[in-house]
Length: 464
Image 1 (cartoon, helix red, strand yellow):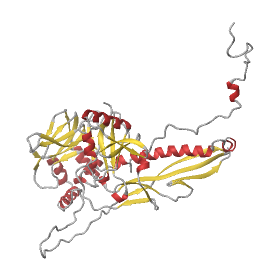
Image 2: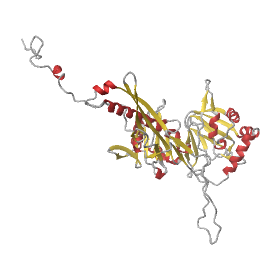
Image 3: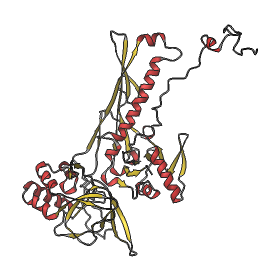
């Protein structure tokens, strides 16, 4: 009969078992781990400004409204689409117009038109006599090229518009053709209908007159009030007088706050504090979770987040869906971009397009980590950028540092019970259940010093 490899027949074995021996052995433990922790490249790469007063004001030159804006729409249960009256204030000729009743009347006069892929919405050279809002889908602006072919000069997506020149007297012509790239919908308002509303509203007539007067003032291509300068003046010519006008309503950023209360039972911290300090580990993991939320807010917060803060002129839709090298070239054609932020799936989609285009993105090393780059601009992965149910996302480009008029993070240092810059851990109390409470608070925000420091590539398709 073969011997039992586990020991004698009575089950006690011939030597001390492993399971029993472990009861007397010291195990080697790892600190508590969490899967939520990400690289948080945005928090690491942003330069941070100290805001002692809790509010950061961005002073700018006076800027007139520009034509690249975004309006919003409401969708009815019957499939109807109507422009939200309040969002009409985003249009240059209705900028900051306060009479909501008049805006409702203007909104009600827009007529819905469904368009099919490839359908011509307005032809080039025809008299421009309407205001057109893109309510759904994508529209390409096309005009004749120098060599007789058609060239695409821009793409419009939901919320964009094109219009007759409201600031000018007399009808002009469309400088481009508008053609539907996808199935979609547009809302149109004839010029006669808009001017009929204006003729019966003294406030709107006055507002349009002021808009037309301001439109005649000299300005640069960024919409800033021009500074008169004479180049190579003649001998004893009169030099122009000028001044730099400032905006009277500069944007202010108040520090946002993220808070939580960490609770630790005193018995745990007293008796089970070796080899790892329970207070320290609980605090470390809580702060990690707070920093993840902080980066999410810096990108997605509806008041100050980067996706919300992008100027309409810096919102670029993709030409065909997936992020091509041509799309990224269009995105980074601004002064001195420092970083691109993209969801890992968007980076994978871009890599696939590079393979199709037979180009290879360069690799760079940042803080010992290998990343891909485009035209020398590193692409940092960020899983906080959302992906829509339609499998589309965004890619963000930033120029950073206040010395370069870029994007800066905001926080206040030297706060009471500061644990690290901008973050405090404050002991609250021990309740009747012997549970100690600690208030963890983080103050932060992000500011865009000039609009061209931030841009976004929209409608980036990642599902193909």
